[in-house]
Length: 144
Image (cartoon, rainbow, N blue to C red; front, side, top):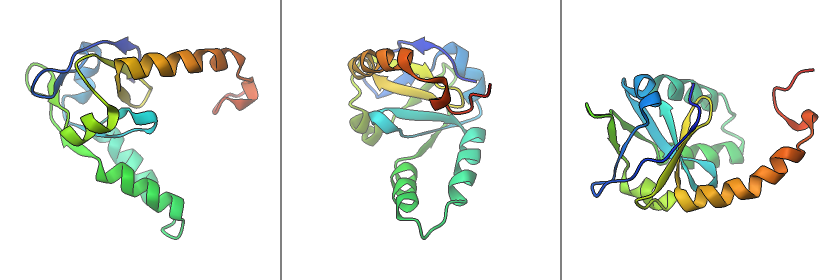
């Protein structure tokens, strides 16, 4: 499970050093893809297979499902971290997420997310107030 907030930097070759806490789970391979809110989702290869299996179950007749699958999968890149725990983020994904040198990597349960540091701060400021006001009935998976 991916948890926490980390602040690595993007090097001049477009690589990021994965947070130490995430390396074991991602050592066998990972998939980077476009995330919502202009971040990059990072899945272990095993978790990405589960996500993909769920996507395959969506009816092809559903236009929203087709559109989502196209954007999500066309931007995907499978990668293997090097011995130092570095992974290259493809230029198309760096551009999509507006990544520059300063990054934030957050744990989001079944995935990690890579954010432009300023975009993350803006997003977090907007969401923290709403977070404190969320009704327990609106939280997915919340059982009483």
